[in-house]
Image (cartoon, rainbow, N blue to C red):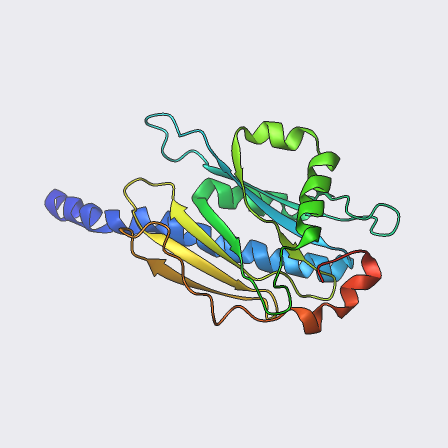
Length: 223
């Protein structure tokens, strides 16, 4: 009986190792949908910002969070446009995502409607730092990625998010492709021997122009 029990535990070990990454990616997709719903319900813009912790994890602490995720909203778009403050409803879920997976890269997908850099993204990131001066310091040395913006009309930026496991035994890397128009996400597993390999995102890169008309009523937004 002990032999059979040991064999069962051995066979289930790979499943346990992979479950953390799969659960974390599922939570990330839920966070994207949650932020989209919050922006539409509150009638305010939200931004999801991911920062990678540059400092390596100490030996023996491979499960420590390697990235920080913050969701902020714009409470006063008319009186204080561009000032974003932490979103409390999303805080717990954002923290849980960071405890399950490591965000390795974030890329906003370029669209025909926005061929150049989005000036509102830089403005929003600067405003977010100003609204929460201790945020950057609490994250330590970080690598900055563009924020994903969510709008009151139910649309958002489209993006690709590369996710890795905090478990050093799980070498898989999943690419989450978020469609800002439809609010749907897809995922694909990348070859672990090809770091930096991204999907083309051609199916997800759709123009946000038709859904952006309502944004202008609440302050400056992407062209």
